[in-house]
Length: 399
Ligand SMILES: Cc1ncc(COP(=O)(O)O)c(C=O)c1O
Image 1 (cartoon, rainbow, N blue to C red):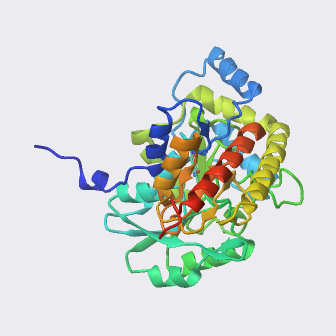
Image 2: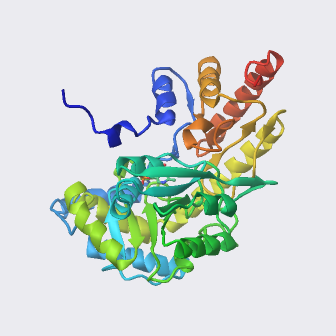
């Protein structure tokens, strides 16, 4: 009997999805397990999509995306990151951030190669490495005081002759960690020294709270890299413009990689839907004001949850600088999936289990705070009650 390919069998099931599947069968769950804001796509973007359909954007486009959208992305990089890109060769529009990860990882790994992944991390990069018959090597970030930091000693120790790729996410899902400029330089140096592709997942670039003003982005690795560096950035409209369901993103890469990804995309997705590309142009052109309002709200949410969690005994939570997640560590917790399941069943609060995010994730839970204040208030209250109750009976704090 034919069987499923071993490369497919090796891809682990998403433990976030496993938890969500249980939650979706229940009523009245406070859903903080997915990486998604509850804000609908702004009206001006929806109207732009409808207008594009009326205008006849119903045909195939270039594999790399509409030239106008690529030009707008190049202008965007000049405006927000002060980076110069060639829209014809260094930018490829993709059908989401995850599709940008998929096609670029596909372009750099041979079967049996190894890809270093900084964790805890959203599981999709590692899963994509598995899908290419290659092996992800997870290197946990180190917690130093209140902030995470790249563990360069462990990175050095993990490099082998088969290593071809280093992936990191900044701002990070689930940590909210943002690579410092020194870390970016060191990561780039490290990649140059060992001849690695450096893949930076920057989909949370705009959700950054340490800028000189609201709306200032987290610094992109593209500010440090030269156009000859083997650097790839995966990007998305999902988080910045509340467009998760639209499936549109982009990648920035060295010219040869850009060309290869464009060519391979013919056989994978060809290109994202034409009218959605037009709507994405409108998002770039008109989105800044709404985006700033969203960042301000997210920062309030973050501060509220951070303060609430820090009052709970046995909970430690590092300060996140970006994205929309908190990743509290719960003293003595050894099975975050069982914890999240019980929390869900007893209190109807849905968090993602830390174990879903690879090495360094067990013992924590991920809370997405891109929700209304009222929901966050109830979730924090119920978590507090749940922890007190189970700390008394040592339900989750026995090793
Ligand atoms: C770190 C990270 N990268 C990429 C993505 C992909 O976003 P999308 O595929 O919706 O563009 C996500 C979504 O949760 C994410 O958290």
